[in-house]
Length: 119
Image (cartoon, rainbow, N blue to C red; front, side, top):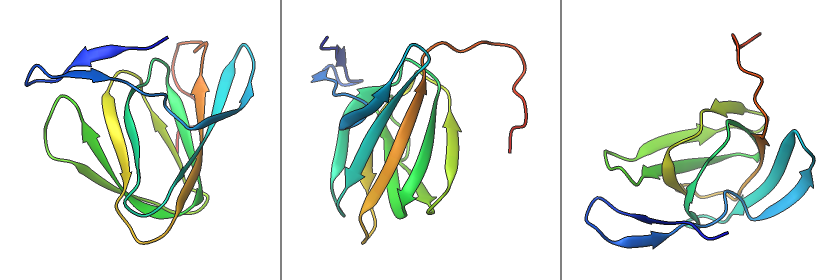
């Protein structure tokens, strides 16, 4: 299913997938592989589920939100894990000088309630 949205300037943007390849999927989770060379981007995409990002190879990345605002610069160290809520339409760019590789785990059926053991 292709999703098209309008930018704040009114330009039509066709959204891409949240990752490059699904490496595992069941009723509860979908796991994506993402690999970006320096300067390479994952296209505009929309997360419909909460998700975790597990960095397998470190890099300095830039997150640009379609809604605007300044880009967010994030360093993702090897072994780092980040939790993010769904909703934001954004693009991820490897802003560093090393290859970035991660696994993105979409939580397809969140249970709700208070989070446990957040670090």
